[in-house]
Image (cartoon, rainbow, N blue to C red):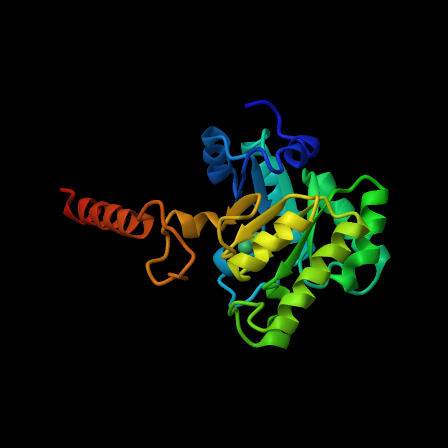
Length: 256
Ligand code: KIV
């Protein structure tokens, strides 16, 4: 696979599905590269899976940049998107620009921001300076304190209209791709049809232009995490636990 670029991804809409996984370190990045996955997201989900926090709110921009550098080393080929964490773009356009630039200098090729109308101006500014933007609507984890849970969005007509309008606004502002998280399949399909930019779904059915999953989730690293949309492609929780127990036994059983 040759270097994956934004124009290639945008041209794939309607022709070929786009694969995306999250990734946070060099070792996993090498495996993602070898597998031929086209897009990597260094997600602020690192707050959950790396830092062990209940939400993504505590993630800092420098932490995302740190992980971007490691992932970039292991995976030069995929298009690399860096999440802008909570607090890195909410206070001013200038602060958003500065933090996005830090992530681009670390090796990202695009940044991702959550929201609709409230991020439209920032998106326009970023893209005007050559920083591609992936938008993110539906379940937006940085809004956890407003919604109180990570449950599915778009349950009411009003909410569905809001999500659709937000998707349209961020496209008009210049977003290059958009993540649709935990929204009804039908709504995701409609947005995919109406937008010109590729849609990447998670918990949004299979009628989006691509799919994203948190890498540890798809590898089955946590037997206790089982959202209905998640297909586990292996059972690393069991495999790793077994391997560690065997190692423990070997160490204990070794003769002096
Ligand atoms: O941070 C993240 O991993 C994400 C994906 C779940 C889309 O935003």
